[in-house]
Length: 215
Image (cartoon, rainbow, N blue to C red; front, side):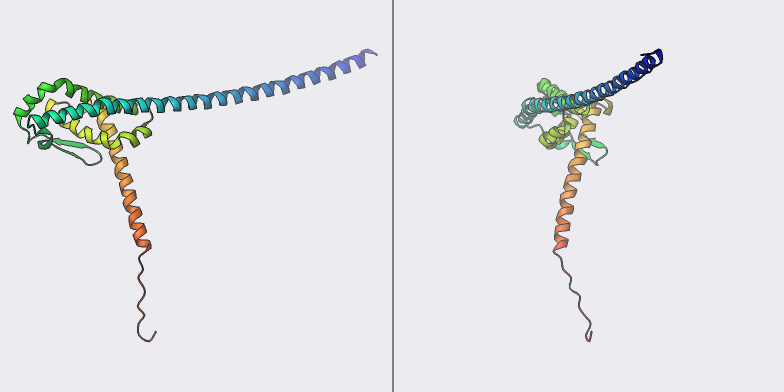
C-alpha cells in the first residue's frame, strides 16, 4: 500500500469515527433532554402531591382549631348575653368589605376581654389559613371545595372583632384577599346555576304562532 492509499484510508476512517461520535453525542443529548423532562414531570408530581397533603393538613387544622375557637366564642357570647356579632354590621360588594360597628354595646367589649386568648387564637388561625393558600404552599382548589363557605362565614366574625380592636386593612390584607377571591368564585358558581335553570326553563317554553284568519 502506497502513501496515498494509506492517507485516503486514514481519512475515511477518521470521517467515520467523527460521524459515529456525532451520532453518539446527539443520542446522549436526546437522552439528557428526556431525563430533564422526566425530572421536571417528577418534580411537578411531587410538588402537586405535597401541595395536596399540605392542604389536607391545613383544612384539618382549620376544623380542629379555628372552627372550635369560633364555637367557644359564640357559646361565651350566648352565656353572657353579648350581642356584638348581631349589632356590628358586615357587608361585601365583591370588591371591598365594610364593617359598621355603630350599634355595638361598649359593655360587651369589656366582657369579651375575658376570652381574649381564644379570640387571638381564632383571628390568627383565620390569617394563617389565608396565607397558606395565597402563598401557594397548599392546594387552594382543594381548600376551596372543603372550607370556602365556612371560611367566609368565620371571616365575617373575624372582621367584626377587627372593628372592635381597630385593626386596619394592612394588617388583615391576606384575610381579605382570600375572602374576596372565594366570595367571587361562590357568587359566579351560583350565577351559573341560575343561568342553567333559566336556559332549561326557556328550552321547554313554546309560543305557538296565532295565524290570522284566512291565512
